[in-house]
Amino acid sequence: MSLSRLAELGFTAQREAELPLGCSPGRVARRETAVVTVWTADGVETVQLPPALKHPDARPAVGDWVAFEPQRGVIKRV
Image 1 (tube, rainbow, N blue to C red):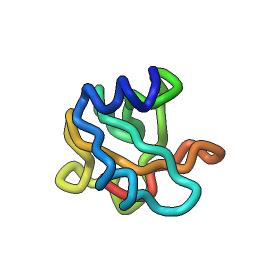
Image 2 (cartoon, helix red, strand yellow; image 1 turned 60 degrees about the vertical axis):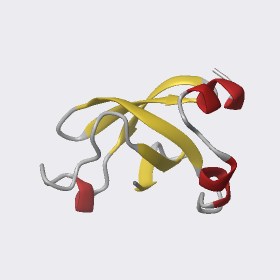
Image 3 (cartoon, one colour; image 1 turned 90 degrees about the vertical axis):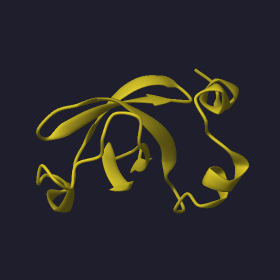
Image 4 (tube, rainbow, N blue to C red; image 1 turned 90 degrees about the horizontal axis):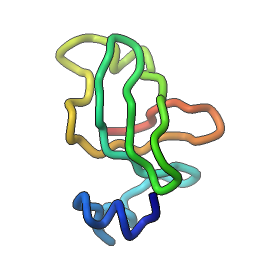
């Protein structure tokens, strides 16, 4: 999947400008207790939720955009 494919899912230049340094964008495709599956520019990845996002009310929902650190595989921001 490329950034153009992410654009088809709603990724915009504004969202790209808001990404924290060193992070990649992902769209949540599936949510579990400690991990989420995201669509990325490189395909599908499973990334970890940091402790602050493990509470059921804080977890990202399917369809949310997240910024994640690809080297660590951890979400940095929803």
